[in-house]
Amino acid sequence: MLKNRDIIFFGLPRHDGPDNGSTSFFIAKELAKKNRVLYVDDPYTQKAFISNIKRREIKQRLKHYFPFSPGISEWANDEVSLKTLTVPPTISINSLNAGPLYTFLQGINTFIIGKRIERAIKKLGFSNIIFINSFNFYYPGLEKFISPSLYIYHCIDGMIKTYTLRHGPRLETRLMKSADAVISTSPELQRLKGLVNPNSFCIPNAADFKHSSKALSPETPVAAELESLPRPIIGYIGNIERRIDYSILEAIAKKQPSWSFVLLGPVEPRFIPNIIFSIPNIHFVKFQPFQRVPEFLKGFDVAMIPFKIDEISRTIIPLKLNEYLGAGRPVVSTCFNPDVMKQKDGVIFIADTPELFTDAISQALASNNEFNIEKRLEIARNNTWDRIGEDFSELLDTLLVKSKKN
Image (cartoon, rainbow, N blue to C red; front, side, top):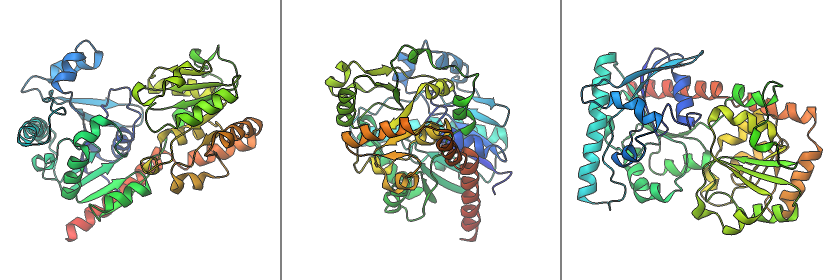
């Protein structure tokens, strides 16, 4: 088990953002229980800074944007304390084509981040640093400013979005080649990343069981957004984009007009067929803070994961799966990732066609008894961030010892 080490964790989600229930931030918090951890926030680009200047998150950062500001803050709850580092805005370059100009400006961005980290290292007295880049592949070469004893690339997802695909695959490949090891969140990602860096490992996602299980508490209200909807409510929480199989959703919603289907999360309309917006029993709820998730889970009669079955979905282990189970909700899902989903067969309902998906929802509603609820909770208890954090810590310790021998 890793103890009393200095760790710099560079994550894509920001520590104070609405997605601070993400894999990156959870792992950082777990490591901070027994180590000194500096979580480096993904910097806003100049474009994002200007367009979001009135937001609370930006206003709180302004004091850290001065050239000689240390940028260091404390983040703490009842269980853990870690330090966060705010970096000044970087140049917006994603719209540029790959080439000399892009490379030059990317070098400037990396320099901005690297010098801020260098100053933080000196101020905090960090040494023999473990550097973990968690899916923030836009700044390859950042490790040169840190000179880490161990350099890890943490791959938490496949690339889907057009914005990411523009430069992401090339930059990620460069980064993986420089890393001492790659840790991925699914067996398929481990296999794919192992083609680039053979020192490849898998530690899956988990869930915040203490948080999701609040859905079972009498003190937790049902989300007001759900109260007026006809029952049963079949719900989904997560990004509403290309990975969802809208043909299945359309078919079952039309076949069961008395059921309410709720999609909660950020919407990318270009991936959603227009017909979905016109079906009266499909309801969209805008993205909510992580703190409110139990209110929605409590209101779901069945939770669903209607993902497409393709090469991208095969790499996914969604956080929502264990969150659903941790709330005691029955789950109906496609078999989008056979490595994972077949392990849950018997606890969740797996269906890959509209007809089977409809039947599975009916079975889930009919079998939602105390015995099955406890089975779901038991699975969730064995897939908590506490346990995953221990696995992550032990692997880092092993890799650190191995690197010293080489």
